[in-house]
Image 1 (tube, rainbow, N blue to C red):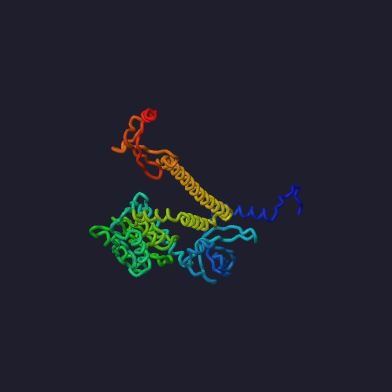
Image 2: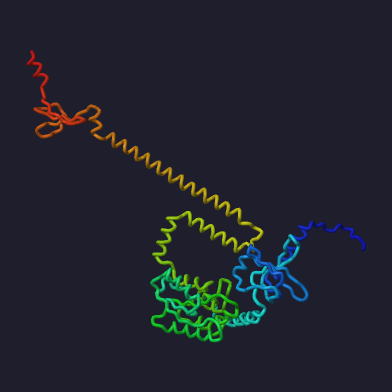
Length: 412
């Protein structure tokens, strides 16, 4: 082979791997893919992440699901299981391998249902059933709340607990219906319609059930159920499944909640009593609130860590903790300074009162002279006639007034 007259680019392993990673991660197609294959080499270390390999007859693909996504996974993974995994393709630079960063995994059999889900969604959306303009506001202080769910499931207990805790005076009307199986859709439609026919009508309807697979939740993708939700005269909050589960009823409802408990919370706005209790709790324990706030922020940072893996939030958290310490110290120092200042002012006022005390004046040798017969305070010599009463620091005594001129004349 004839060598080139021009020198080719010389790479380090790191720079070449980074270039390949940038090329892969800039490809939009590779950042939103579904990959079917069989699971092998499944591993769940103590970190909570899931490592596995997807393979078929011709190739294998190394894959990883971070803890934040794994916590929402409603599927018991096993080696040999045929699945479809959703995620994005990236490069693990340490080993120089490309791999799938998965955020959803479902059994392969769900593919047909998912295609039917997309078909129904497009059809109903074209009719305007999901238009944002159709959404109605949820009443802030409802008096009657209707619930459509299974009467024996955990969802109804969770919702009732949340409602009683947040708004105990509200009346709850349960319209029980199966939430899974072939008989579920007509029963759900009947329950929604029966609540709309009540007099008075509920202020809001909660349509809910716990999480499950796409087959378990399919009743809420039924066309008749979706149309019943959309045509309800009463606003509907749909809380079906877990946070990542979406059904067509969610799109048709006036408000979508990530869980049944969240649906109950959205239906019961904070009362004045709740607000008062919350403010008292905050004012009484500011330190606890701040630490809870930081814990919430750390939880949010954890959920974003997979997409923000190149930017560590540790430095900011440390800075916030230091800032919290500084603010706590400033509050303590300010309070101590205020108390010292008020103590100084109080001592000054005490000294002023002591100075103005007439007994202190008498203690320095002064006396108060009054006319004995009527108690008139003597301020001038002309007032001093007959007997007088003299008050000093430790008591009073009487005295007689003598004219010095008259006394001198008598002596002569």
